[in-house]
Length: 335
Ligand code: BDR
Ligand code: CA
Image (cartoon, rainbow, N blue to C red; front, top):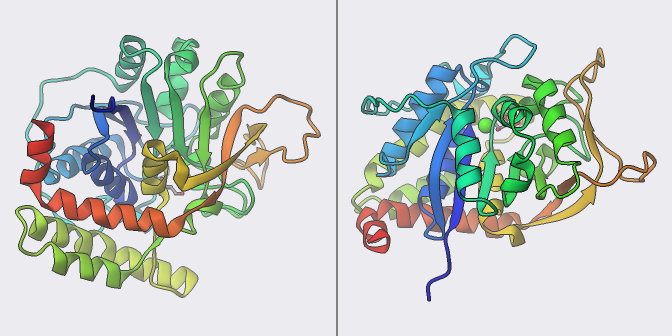
């Protein structure tokens, strides 16, 4: 008997690396994507939703429903990351306008409905600020028991931030939401909350020459040319930005790592620890504080990534992009 598929709900603020995470999910035969919810973060909600639909269409999965959620953080003004992802959120990539939809259901309703209907089965993968997840768990605290696991990209647990010296973007953008989520998963009976932070994701790097070589390998496949153009156009300005900041041309696979680890937990090493989120610090707002020494004497509420098999992750990603380029192979597997 074929193994049951992993039921994914992805919550994204679709910028470039969220897009690569979505493509990774679409290319993964072991995943059943129940839907993608969107949130404001890298770009505003409308762009995040449009980008999500356009990327799913690029993967040949325009059938996957996309539900927009919260358009701003709980208490703060939204501040986008267009300096990283470009004004559109997808660098210089220009994807066809996705078809209009009349499905106007809200992300928070859908996260709750899917988690309840598929109780114990849904793996929720937030790759943006945690606003939608905080709203869902506030409305229905049992969500932490309904899901099978949450695997989020966010925070930095043994190192500094990328948006301030202390804070990583997803948590910094809506620290109140992040705090609600980490506290909710401290409840008795809560499913595992796996946090894949910046200090680990920044070990997983995609290089320009790997993108170029992938483009050559998929040039003659059904979806290859469109995918290759997307990779090149989406990452071009990002490489320039990172080179100015870090002196190297590298693409950091933040969100793809969280998504890949949701499907294959062996990619990361984790440690259970009590985590809280700073919301009031003048210099440290949005900082994730992990009590590695147990001085709080709180029960662990998170499984925090402390290591990664970066080579395996990049290998999986490139191999799956080759599969995705063979659109017909995926169609046969689905049938
Ligand atoms: C996170 O912030 C966003 O800019 C990326 O999409 C990723 O989710 C990295 O800090
Ligand atoms: Ca993201």
